Image 1: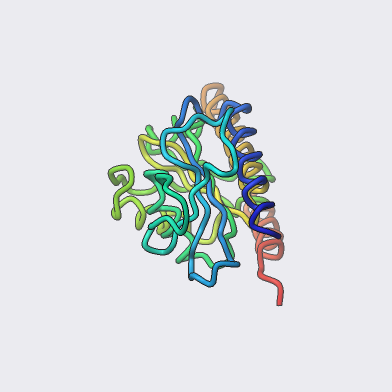
Image 2: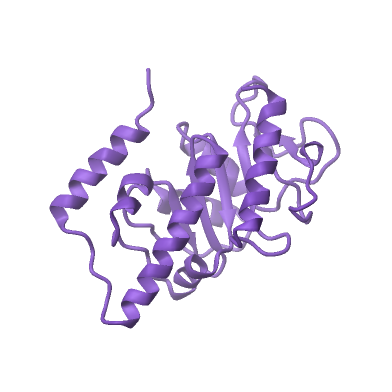
Length: 219
């Protein structure tokens, strides 16, 4: 994929993220890994404090592994350190998206992980979505805590903040964000009417294998 196409797809994804109500105002952010720069773990990230509806591809900020802009004078998202930590730890990840959706954020505020209560959560996300240890937004502590809680899955809840999703592409990361938010909403409602029940252990194991088969890097 060309650099121009990567920029266009990132803008399309964050504008859809905004349209779906997964963020409000200028909250949240997203990035895609840049493999064509020759710089390890370089990525293209949304700029700080710019609204999504009018965002244009030229406003995105390409950064190196020191979080310095490779070109242009834009300011990268304040959450870029967690994006970088994920790219360093997970070479299978091609895109990262951070949202402030209501139900996923509520679980993070309550310190409640999202268990595998629907089949899709394990097949497409990898199982229970854990809550990271608290760290100040944008800090190294939060970056490490987020990576630790993410493990080999595709989503993690950030306490008092929101959630991060990872995938091969930014379009897929958006789908993970939407799925986690929907399952979080189901979980909260199920807890209110008697308690959410996890899928049976044998089904979880089968679905976990399906997830690993889907996400295993191809040779």
